[in-house]
Length: 537
Figure (tube, one colour):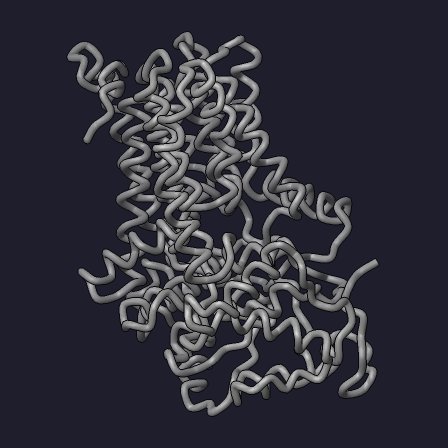
């Protein structure tokens, strides 16, 4: 069913007098498609979701380790889309790339054909996305960015369609709900525009109706997993770091983007400032939402993947630029600047080929994730590999199939996908472990956001191996009893729901100190079974 308000948008590509002007735009879209195909790859983090999908398709439920219900993915809508496609194709890596490419191309088609006010602004916008390293890198990768981009483009089409109506509010609310189901923090991107539109239309009920899919998912999540938020949120937001330290690392993330992908940051700044400079009141809420999102990203320490969390606000900035009625000289100057800045960096997607990442120089605080994995998971390099995913983690995962006890691991993506359903993996970073996610990480000198290690409690591995609570620390053992009830007991066991209430309301918390199975490798050992305060000052 199509929203009636969509028909009010000017169909620029259908105007006969404008068709010739759009030939360069179509050429730019073809270039964008080519660059996305040339840079297509699969990230290790995507394989975390892939393992859950394989278990789901295999009849084990939405589980990462089949013995417990832990939500290791932040993007249920993306997971269900890939699951549906996996049932058709029978595999995931090429399927994820294909779906991502299709979604990305449709996004730029919407930008050029439904959102841009003329051919030249459309050309500027498409070229900005094509030459943005961040946007092309994460137009594939197996992560949720491509779906997020399409939903944002759809939101913008409805938002700019005309005066606010109850129907408009419903569709905006529905798209917002789908965005949150794709990535929870995406709410910040569109919240100002949605709230303002709903207030102007005086439409509360349509807003509630639009959020029904999100409400339904949260009810399912609480019943099935025992929590409203994904386990990854508890693991990644539970850093133990002071706010100013996280903000400093977040600013470092921005600086690294400026150094390696300057076009992305420059277009972001220009696109988000423009509505305020030209007093475009309709555009200001979207610009504000993008600014709020960037501020949030900085406040939580940024990310370890260069550019990943900047692609969605970049798309909003490009949409806002494409909505400007630019004089021809101004548009041509902008186009020239986009091309010069976009072609200047040595890591520009325009120059990427099958050798990309072959001289990758190792892990850093904010890294070029595509360079790290492209030789092992890239589309162009697949012709020279034994299998599509060909990485040492794959070999280690296959070897772990013979393990007769829980395997402790920090890099869990490709490893977990190939370790098989029977292998129980203990994720040191907490992403796949409900207990470790809630324990404060131990301090590390060169910590990376999203890679904060937890110390394994004494007796925890024995507990997982036998099913009997053998955790040495009595307070932590009692806390784990609640976690085990929430993630392992029958869904409607009354004891489980008591534990769920205690955990979600904060009535029980893990201890700050507990007995360790072993001292963390990068810390001064205090002896096996020592007690350590894992919190930071």
